[in-house]
Image (cartoon, rainbow, N blue to C red):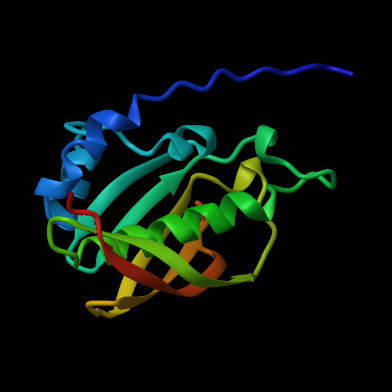
Length: 164
């Protein structure tokens, strides 16, 4: 067997969380995208980067490699699910005022084709389909480097106060 190794580094999430109560969702994510605030630690595990933020929409890019493989030589569906869950949640966050957070209630994923390290980079876009004060609805899709859709998702997110 040939062993491989990866080192994962991330910034202290407390640095960004300290700013969360005072920034609306879109400003928080824009600051994260340009590096003024640290990204989510989970993004480091999956090679995810936030590349676009607009009201009701975000786009992530991910770089799958063989460390993401399942036992049959394809990228584990959990990476694609995490990418979609992140995009749906962050799209919802762009619509929220300061002092407000969210969490996934439900996510429905449709896997359309296998993903391998040759598929990437993957581009995932999340879009809000219905804004709300208590629940936000969103949908997303993941495309491979050739532009083929590899997965889609729809979900709902619970909105709650995070103000002290």
